[in-house]
Length: 262
Image 1: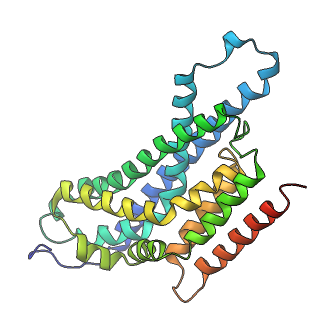
Image 2: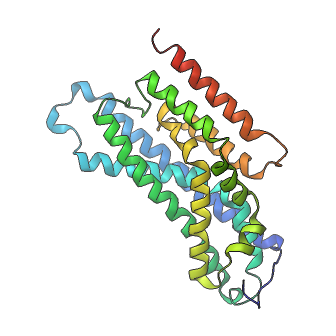
Image 3: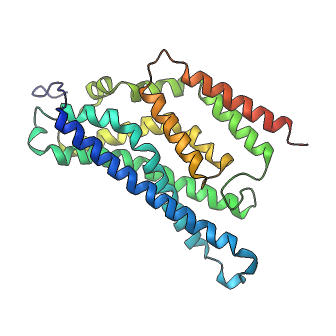
């Protein structure tokens, strides 16, 4: 930690500016998500009438899926980073970062977003591959109840692991994270954003896998997961959100597995 920088509290105007900026980024991302989801559904709807020559090339399908996942992850995950970005904003009021605060704050957010864009690329490759194997429907939902049930049970079990607990703990305590990870300057902000994004990814990747069960283009489920991720980070630790979600996911997955042969 820099000797010339100490903890600070973001001013009300700073908080309003940060929240407004994050809300704008989120709104743009959701708008793009809705448009891209519509664009991905249209070819599927006209598929029986289309000739094989009119089908999108594999590279085009992957590009569209990557764009969809990228917009979706930004829209879902940026709101959950709000407490950390606000805390970081307060800490940039002092020390070497102070003269160039906007750049440092933007760098922090950029680092966080880069992590989720990397995840988006991996998720889109997986989605396109599973679609070509016939494992996913045109809406991005698994067509095999056994697979869907297994994914849900695994996601629920992950909610109770020490890995999940450790990563969620870092996301829930902005001050602790800043004390431990502080780096000065815009480059330092980028590094810290990357590290926060890594903890967030470690906390939430299994929940994102649920989208392959309910549909990667199902906007309502995207919103539900986005709200849940935010709730996990801001709710008081005494609330058993993690345990309740684990029970719900495992129960849902078990039901899918039990009825798969019906």
